[in-house]
Image (cartoon, rainbow, N blue to C red; front, side, top):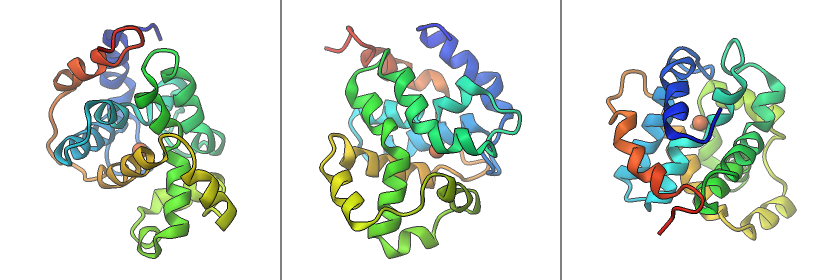
Length: 185
Ligand code: FE
């Protein structure tokens, strides 16, 4: 995939519209809903961009069945970070890189969190390493972008409602363009 937003959006409109992450909605609808939740919550624009991009690894790797590839499910945050950190500012790439760790963190510190996860998200938790232990919790909290990653994670979990209306991709184009490396004001 090239660096252009056009090619990125083409992947959202093509593969992303037809592939599922074990949920009852497409990858693209899931990411649009996550971005919409961030925007509704008053998130800063960089974090809205992170929400729209957080599962981009699935668009890059294009598994035949969306989720269900344990290796990709376990590493999609790192793969997304590697892609995004070459193209977008750290405030976008950083939270994406930690959004799976944030799930493991929340499972450890918030008793109600794990109970509310979707079935697919509970399944992938295991290949992602399970809940953090106390030392991992402390280490996570000390990382840059940890707090933003936790916010992103909660929007991610909300963004799984089949048929929920969202703005279209073009609504988010200015936010993405404003946070490309070398273009941030
Ligand atoms: Fe997600």
